[in-house]
Length: 378
Picture (cartoon, helix red, strand yellow):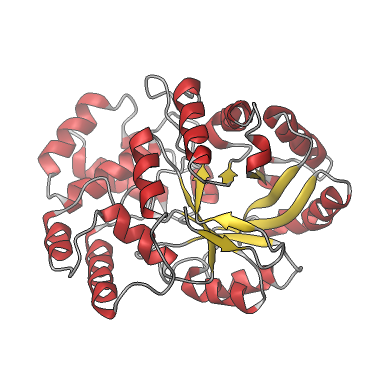
């Protein structure tokens, strides 16, 4: 495993971090984590050098924290940095923040969270961030010994707003989304460089864009990878692109299978900063441009939009819309929409609650209307 120095603490941190948002589940039920598989995966990763585990209060309907806590028993807790997130946007008042943090500690069954993040500060949530005095709250949590380091995760729209947040406080670390498709999205590469200029460690999420860069490859993408001077898997290319930045401290991967754990351990035991050649970077840029041309909507299936008040499977529907476009499979998708979805896109009432929560800032109600028009039988 490759390690990078945390410039704030001097600690060596594994380049690969375990993101506990997409754990294996039982019968596809999001909240029903397969504990045996998950515990094996996390411990196997730690046994092979991984030192960073990231979870959140809302992941897997709250069960991610519980299962991560179980995985870190038997001496594993002492081997890792535990990162957890405070979702201030689910609170009704600042007084509720104490209860949320206490519940995270209880679920994890630990006394202190190593890296406590303010979860997803963006333009829409910023007013509550100020109103609920979230920054003073996490500063106090650190002073009270409930957190060793404090930071935030960002899904805002621009690098400019991101810089404003960075400048609010001398953060111990910050977590941003970055992959070769999203170089200029949210904080982007510009935000990564800004963190480095402030001496703030950068933790990266969504390096594979929720699996979109690896799971299904359109023919045009496969053809572009074939032109590369070196043959690698799509996951290998995506991870190496992020690892190529020396400003990156840790790269989180939401692993769902032991095979993914093995592959990612292998890749990030080799990846080096500044190692990609100009020819390799040129191919990656071409792939990014083609993906951005093909994919209508940048959903990462993070499930922040759920539950929908009327039961729409929003990530599934957006994914079906994307695949219909990428693979020109309109008839197949129409059949699947009408045959297998209990709640059709046309049922959307445009309440836009999901849009307030979407980290990718998708206009979901418009997408549902579009899918209804394209796929549903009249």
